[in-house]
Image 1 (cartoon, rainbow, N blue to C red):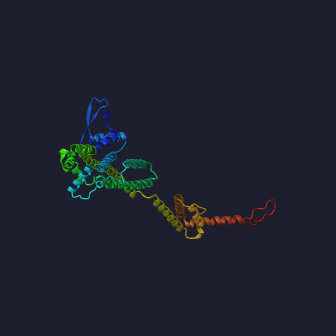
Image 2: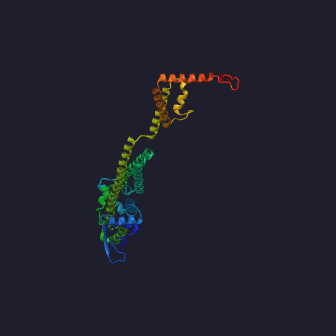
Image 3: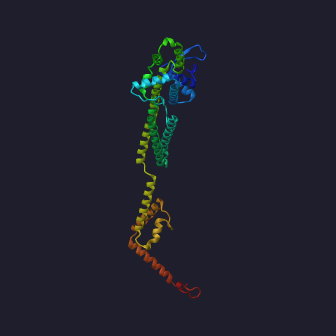
Length: 381
């Protein structure tokens, strides 16, 4: 209901620290023109302030709790009556040496930054989008699939470590939200202002003769100890409970993100176990080519067939041998082997002998002289 006349943030903090409003009370707010009154809860007003002031509930609750404790310490410095009542209640709980500072100190060494959860949520969404993109790109046979999965695995591992650190910090901060000596805070939340005055009146003798002095003391007490002093102690405890609840809500968000990243990390790990490493695959191909090259060299037993070896390998100088070179060389070798097996050795010898005879006869042939001129045998040319 945005048409209500909400309290401003400073006013809301001040009213809570004075005990006039609190988590156990409802708030009556008028609409903007003042014609209606709407009753809302304390939590609803807190949500409105978080949205309008752009702050998170954890920061708001810590702000109010710190203000309550600071006001309590200020009262102990101004009102001996208030300090005396604290000492009395502390001794009833066997806390004889308790000091006001011990009861109301409020120090936060490492407050949790809620923005980190938003940042981690964006990072988890980014990892999910990258994984989905890789899943779609596998149809195109992405050559960098293995490297991309390795990168996602590293990022998800780092994200898991950060999430665990955030949850550990939230667990540690729970000790700061707890009020110091909660049992004394609880006791004082049931102690009305009249109890402070009764202690004072019991110490004054001849009250009838000291009426003027009692009225002066009452004015001073009214200024230092408000009528809602018990509600202030109650607000301090309830705000601690609200801090615990918000702390658990933040922890739950982190656990949800951790579950998403954990599942994705396991899926990536399973994919990498079945997906071959390109570096090892290239190393295996190089070893395979070397073995094939050695095998081909074993087919040529002596150095008299060096020319054949070069023809088979298809290289003139030492260069890197590829799969295509090996396949071509093997094909040439197999074809030549089949040709040699198809030819009859005896026919090959006759054909060679016949060719040699014809050549020798050609060189020894004496041609007829032209016009009575003798010609030299052709082997003298």
